[in-house]
Length: 193
Image (cartoon, rainbow, N blue to C red; front, side, top):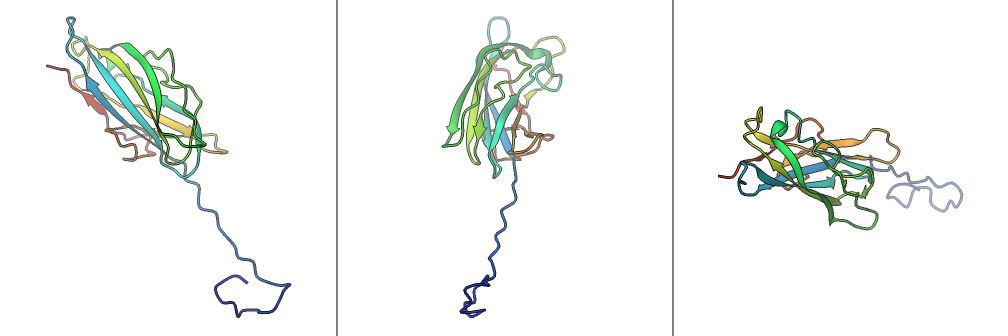
């Protein structure tokens, strides 16, 4: 019989009381963090910035159909200061266990489209990173005063039709403010002296 008292209904081989179990609630969630490093000023006044984005499944269910978008040309991002992609995105696993597969990097990232293809699977706790380099002109016409940037990571939970997303926070810890598609903390870059 259910419970911790074996003296309840003893000796009855036919009418025990089943012990119920309740599955834990499914909580799909993704977190992302973005950091940057800059090179030296080039002869034309531009410089290269290398971004690293860490994405982690911070929920308790597997996520698939992974996405990672970074529109550097948006006026709230680098805007007209973005000049070109110097190095295409490279995807690597930071923590990848059985059940997870890395998404493929986009071979034709142009600063506006997705950094990865719509594949990949992340089990809870696993993470991957994407690294890419762009050229920035801080003196471009209408360039923003602050060269800040965020990316949006996402994934689809089993049976879901709407992905969970997260706007990146600056740094290297994707568990800071995860699952928040609206209020990430932009990653700043400062032109080198």
